Image 1 (cartoon, rainbow, N blue to C red):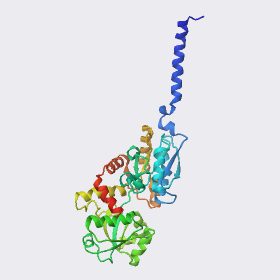
Image 2 (spheres, rainbow, N blue to C red):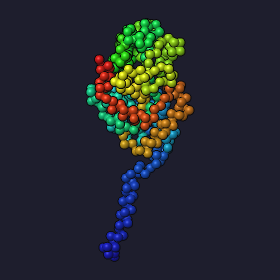
Image 3 (cartoon, rainbow, N blue to C red):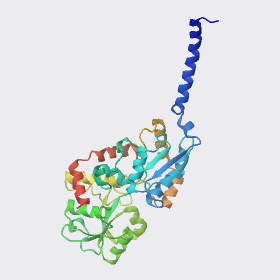
Image 4 (cartoon, one colour):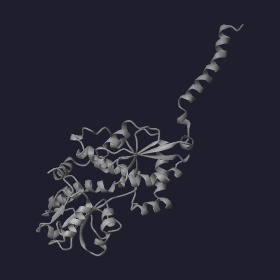
Length: 352
């Protein structure tokens, strides 16, 4: 028989070994490399829009190629989660989705501005997320908006628009094709009249061709795909572009920021420019393990340079003009800290 002390000494190494084994079992993922973790798994990409819209096209193009750049080569599943202009998906991504690196989200651009502008829900009551706690991968696409008028219009320069009334077509209050002509009125003193009720940009294009309206604001990609000949054949006068920088297709057309008449206007225009720069954002939920988040960001950036992805993007009309994750993170912080006075000026324009 063992004495009591000897029995205790024999049990101590066994107990220590058992504790080590239990700890290893309790956190196996923590010891896994990204390659070990992702091997044999699938990643879900949540798209905050319906099937067949631009958001969906961009998301599916990235998902089709990104897996080969992630260690372990996981497959991708694209899940559309439309509703409330992206708020439903963004709330889900922040509060309910897995935080282990197997879920990526594509919030709607408007969602990024909701915590400050509070336009999609009653005074921000539906916001259940903190934008600065997401891990941003970046955006593959910027979507500048172009303000233009027909060459047949009585005013075809910004200076002339200050004294001559032009009629712009719009789909409704709050739409970009309403907000931007209004911004030109407030900031530069233009005399634009805005006619509401058009169902789509194509309907407004037809109205301009028929002479019902004289001006329109439209996304550059929509303009190039649907009415590229307007620019090629000089049928419209381009007034300005709204975006963080000049689009490479229109290097001679100044941005609204460049034309800002004073510092107060520039604050508001910087906010607007960010909206069109961060056109198709990709994000991970909070608390995604850092090593997996880094692996996903690297894979995402590699995808945007992949020849097969670029060929697909060209085929479906995507102009790849990326903003990387760290830059996007800084831009979102700037949006969140925009002076309240600039936000209120913009809200007054959007909600007259």
